Length: 271
Image (cartoon, rainbow, N blue to C red):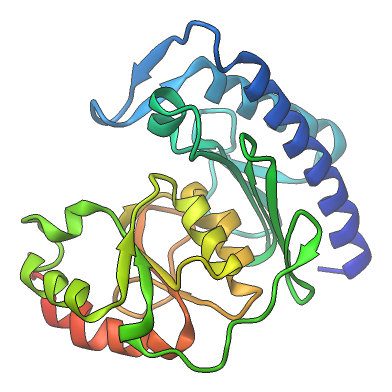
């Protein structure tokens, strides 16, 4: 993507994501209409839908040739990543939004011909905006974030993943994951993939593992984390499928191969 065009798109995206955050802050204490989607833990509110509708309307008015890939039904039906595509999660961490009124974020990843060009993750309750532009670095509230340090040992790392990894599951032998927890410095869970990825860029955690998430959960944060030197693959070490749900590992490059080879592949269950 041409850098001038990238900057123009980013400027509009930043303006809209900040405005969307104001919508959430204004309405979050109103009585909520809460619905379930794929499971009782997969929640959506009318505010999720309103924010996505707001963003989709702005995008289509300003960039009619761009496409939208989003969670709540206002996007396009995509068969490829050709062209410029906005991958949107209006509220990543809806359960946190409902129950905690914090620890959620608006996430936007803008891809051009399959390449992540722009990422925005807005923690609107803390008023922290994380951004990344391909080739130009990552930022928190316009302050550039440093590149990851050159070396990191796994025993020095803090990883983000949820408790399902340590319970019996269909993906990874939980006993292997328990060994990983004993190896690393610590683990954290925040209930928002977008925030975990932004925290990698900020240096708060060193990696994030997930068994099965949609592209809109990770698109914005992944662009940001990659701009400080983090690497992203699925749990097999292959490129992430950004058109469907996939497993993901985003982490400091110094610990990637050890996590994949000594834990994820070793513990992988064959269905």
